[in-house]
Length: 204
Image (cartoon, rainbow, N blue to C red; front, side, top):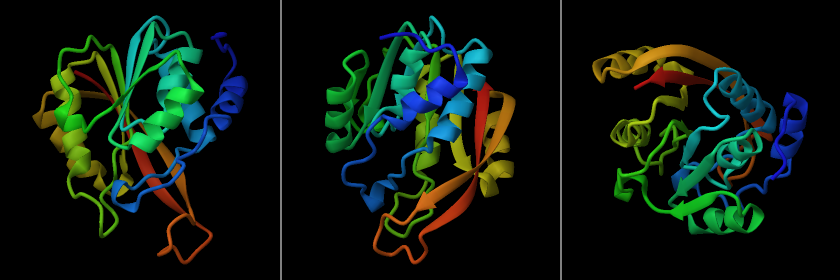
């Protein structure tokens, strides 16, 4: 896999990663837009969190962050998702990433990981699992990486800052994005809607 050295090329590569084949509303499956993923990954790369590091993508979907991390020179990349359809598609697209089909709660904690990216369900839909984002944070703490990048609704920022601090996580950056939600589920009434999200970078 040829290493990418320009942000523009990274975004182009991310655009080629297959999207969810059959998005499931209870898992709140929305593909992270290439512009957002590329911006966050480039920031992480610039901060020294990807090149030659062991990266894990929790709730990876079709593997955008794991695949892109390898393109940026990660020593290894692991993608974990509960949805077999997404994992099968990701595995067939990229053989350089170790994709695992598993509920994160069932994942063993014996992985050697430097950096974790995670984009958990926000819990904003009626059928969604409430508190899923906190379960992702708890699993990340158990896996004990050096640094964590975690997506959340911007409206929960104050609560999350307190939660991170109570769990002895040192927040270093908060990245802010307008996350476009396309019309992919039958209950969607608009072609698209923007949701304000934050990505918290924290040391463990």
